[in-house]
Image (cartoon, helix red, strand yellow):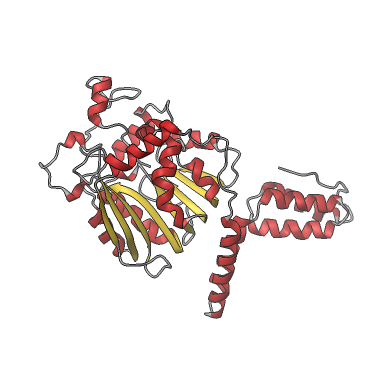
Length: 389
């Protein structure tokens, strides 16, 4: 969705003259990061040649930022069955999130960013990438998301956009789902008490209090809000909010902290570590999507509870959705074909029928099932299907 501004504006001016870095000089009003300005900036004007990794330079790189600042804050919510990442950009955090879930949905308003991610993560069949409109999530089914993650992007989202997204969270979060959102806290400061050209394009209409209040009005609860001094030592420009459904296992009274040392202690520590120790290698995968078994067991237990409460349809839907995420359709399709080639066509048909039920859009499975059913007819083709992709 919305992309982080990058280095402080004064540093940009120092290194690039009076203009900002980009494919062409930006002509937007930096004090008002509207949806239209965000769409234009990150979809058309921003120079993505560094893939957004320039925004991690202060930490010593993407890897050190992830392990120092991000993973410690979300570790208690992963692995997760299904993760939604809002505004992945060119995939800085997608690279790490993909191994912490069974299914990852990424949504960005910048079409070029989504195209890049589709190519970058083309081998990850469990990732679905969508171009969004910046205010809604129609591509995400209700009650399905275990973790919503957004970092370095919603800081540019104004109050109207934040409210729209919170409304969507109230629809899409699973019963125990949580959202980790990095957003602006600039509204907490009176206009005229700060330099509007030195607040890193933060949204002036959003604060921690506004997000907490808006979430509560939609049946959600803020359980943690960490206000951080971003790029300075005196202003808590940003906030990390953890939001869940009221009554979820993570629900509790809000814990609010003020972290004035974020820019002067945490970030320098990360950078110091980067000068002594190398980053993680890009080809290394840090998770085996171990959440699959955990989430299947939990979904099974939840389904049985719903059944006992007289809600068989919700029970079926809960278990169906989890099994759909947990089962690799390519592997099951190949197992069905190999079973058929081993002489047990009936078992092959049963496997394919189950696969088509779980993944009705799996073309190879549908074609293989049709071919096997045709074989059983007197005039049917006698060719055993190959492993289809």
